[in-house]
Amino acid sequence: MSPIITAFESSPDRGQGLARDMRVRWALEEVGQPYNVRLVSFKAMKEPAHRALHPFGQIPTYEEDGLALFESGAIVLHIAKQHAGLLPDEANARARAVMWMFAAINTVEPPILELQTAKFAEGDKPWTAERLPLIKQRIRHRLDELAVRLGDADWLDGAFSAGDLMMMHTLQRLKPSGLLGDYSNLAAYVARGEARPAYKRAFAAQLAVFTGKPPAG
Ligand code: GTB
Image (cartoon, rainbow, N blue to C red; front, top):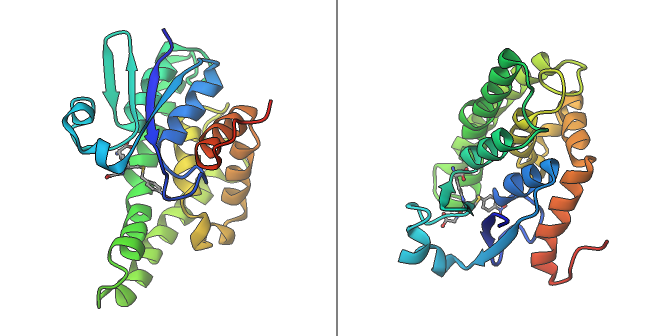
């Protein structure tokens, strides 16, 4: 049976691939695993049936043969362990790829999330104007460090891995802010990820939810 994932019935980004089901779709496309999608409304996400899968009432979730998972990083890691293509075979390289997955969601993503929260959830608060430059500074600090490590390499550690997938999707959320534009190697890194056929298929599939038109091809 193909796994079933959940995604927004109506994504606030209007299908720009920023919601976290995109990571899961992309991983499944990279390894060639077909999947089904169950779309959930914001109301349904908070109801008991969905909370049984996801205690925090969010997307994405993943169900497969008696296994139910939530947390995009855990889901991508599960897919990467089950199939070839997203983790190197060599034990140390494999551990480093997992390390980069954690770095994406634990070290790089938090200040990026703070920026989203400040802009969209706290945009009307009196302290926001003062807070935004501080948050942007924290993001730049991480980007400076990441840009140095990436240098002129294509991927973070040898071949493309689940670590790059998670890092690239994390960085993508910065696009509307323009912050990524100051880092030519990181912008090129994101563009390399977006050029992958698996990414394009995943992007088209989630965009089709918004447009209502099935992906071409
Ligand atoms: N740590 C969890 C994971 O990695 O899976 C976080 C899951 C999460 O934040 N899910 C969000 C959600 O379900 C969707 S991805 N939110 C609904 C809720 O909490 O009620 C976050 C997201 C949402 C929208 C955009 N956007 O429109 O640009 C981008 C990202």
